[in-house]
Image 1 (tube, rainbow, N blue to C red):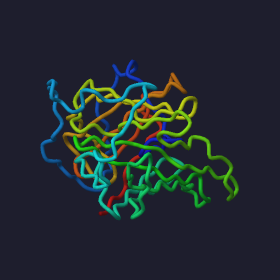
Image 2 (cartoon, rainbow, N blue to C red; image 1 turned 120 degrees about the horizontal axis):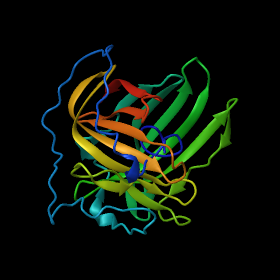
Image 3 (spheres, rainbow, N blue to C red; image 1 turned 90 degrees about the vertical axis):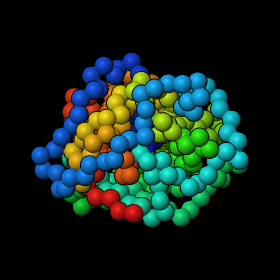
Length: 262
């Protein structure tokens, strides 16, 4: 999954490696400071909790198209039309944009998000991916697949990691639960041998600082994948903005938000 949204570029995570995930990250060179409003995330669990039965592992899931919308308004994963996020890592620049396009997947209409990864040194494309999302009636944001193209010397070199819900044994997952709470785990995507990402919420009150700003009460997840058992990533989501930071367990591999516009 992409570093931002889930797919071939991201390192994804499993629930058993999460003990070290309760700290927060900071950056002394933040460009601005933004304090988020109190989160809607909760630490309580009730039988009526709409996130209590999220997909796990490779279990099949059937989606009712009548339950879904492309109007994605989750406070920690907002997708207004035309929104644009720009991230940088040591070697790459990632631009994520909400398009006006839609894709119908097993009857579910999904919104198309375009991820474009280029080399920071002025080189060409690294990867271009279309990701497909929809929000269910309970408020969970579902990830229904991706069409990814990796580039080498200006030409497409691989489409590995591409998948679509309902095709060749692939199943959709949840990219952001309706009500994040500490300890909640869920599958993000499943396509055996190519996309097996999972996440676990480790905090709903994390503080995080990136060049775009400082955010309180952020959702922090630990992400793993069965395809790379030793890899552990942490991701942070700020209210009203979405994904703001990805880092690895040892603090390396930092990818941070530098700009966001609606």
